[in-house]
Image 1 (cartoon, helix red, strand yellow):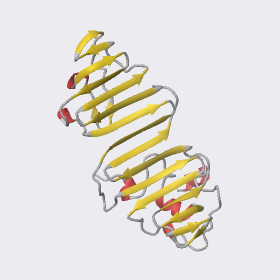
Image 2: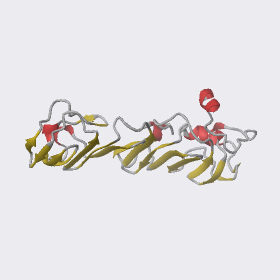
Image 3: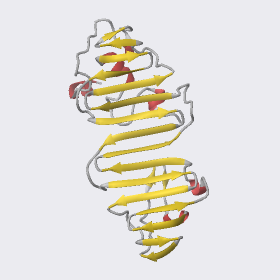
Image 4: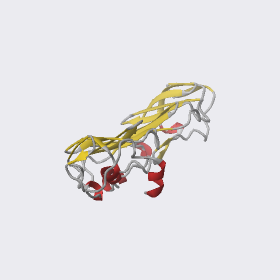
Length: 230
């Protein structure tokens, strides 16, 4: 099933990451054919985004520091890697060539990778030490994804997984914000986009269902009042 990023131009990260609302209410620093940048509010969110690049669909966002401090769980064909600090519940202390030399794994070792839940005994561990390990398995065994990853590094977390290269006719799409810069991109170009824009001027003045009288201001997009109204 295609994501809302593709079908509706909306991101799961935040309501302000909305393609059509950006077209209508954003002050476009620049836009050219299929992508551009809005100069908007700092925050709501401070940093975050969602993207699709052919067969890769990913997200990133700011979160709390801790719980845990860092984490990675990834599967790439026949390779599984897992790391977490503090260590994931029921992680063994030392494993070599699938032999547990110290500590034992229990039912609490259940890292989540999108819809898939891991189990320690469902792969062959080349090594595992304290809080991290490297394993191998048959590609796709036990319902594992062929390619997917999630991570957290202090206050930044994200993930990626494989999707069909063309969804609803869309090859690439992106909604992202970093401080005061809000970006949108889609190919083939999204319907009713600004077409061409520079420093607040738009070639398509009715972009996003707006009208010629709608004149957004710099730094205005993404303010809390706007989020409550949308």
